[in-house]
Image (cartoon, rainbow over all chains, first blue to last red; front, side):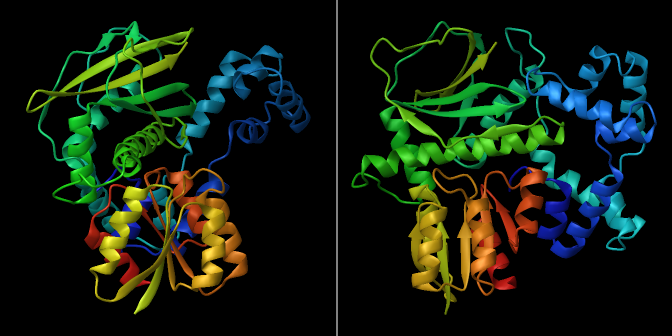
Length: 288
Length: 119
């Protein structure tokens, strides 16, 4: 079981076919206008002005709406009117499936309830962070999903420690890092001891002993755990309209002095106390 | 027995899938490719009935390979197995490119076999 979106859940349950879902997505794409398209449809700007703003975006890292305001093509009130219209006319995937004839209204309500029950395991619990940023909800969710996947995938009992700001990445047997890009820029790291590495490998490979396994295979199991966590973080973030791209994970073997925090980054440390006195640590290196 | 090709840069995921396939009784694993380019080559040499393929791989990724396979081989049925299955845009793109289904990681053996048997 993983973080899913509603259309995927319906296909998995055999409620709708892939063809029906694609038809509904096509309806959504026709109905749910992008910001520029909606502003033109509302006759607030011309297509030529949208084009000029798109050209300006090549050299300015700004959202289209903000740029149209800055360029004097829209007022701030008009920009908000466009957002409001986008929201009020948005066609959700369930509604699109009803329009496409793949679901009845009653079946939609029933399946929404079933979907909520299926995903209840991944509803975020509150986690306190020692700093404030616009993306705090993403970092809280990342920590929360890490904890849930330690239980779900690794079948380990643990106690999470208090999150703190770190000045160095402490040494440990190995680290796995995955870079996150898109609407956020960060590096997700998991640090494990040699003993914990073998424990994780035993669980993921389903073997009683991993003593004869090459280091490459052992390390790969932690990389895959990180891949699963970050993929599910991306899925959960996408439900909140936040785009996160993930890159293939890499392993690091830190020196005894640990690893420095790169300039311009904030480091959050989340200690994870595993039973038998073993410790895992999750670290987020957040740019900006 | 239906033949399955596993495509994943992760050795541990490949091991998990190979084990599930070997113990199924009705499928046999014909190989493991570590990226999209290897998958295209092995599809030609091993002629599998099904391909279980990751999306996020170094070198040629899964969606690029899926695009090529959809053009080159109309017979093979591809299922994406990915931690990004819950990202709506990725799921939709995979279906549009011809994937028969998308399995999210972490997966259960029963889900993988059910989906392969339904193809």
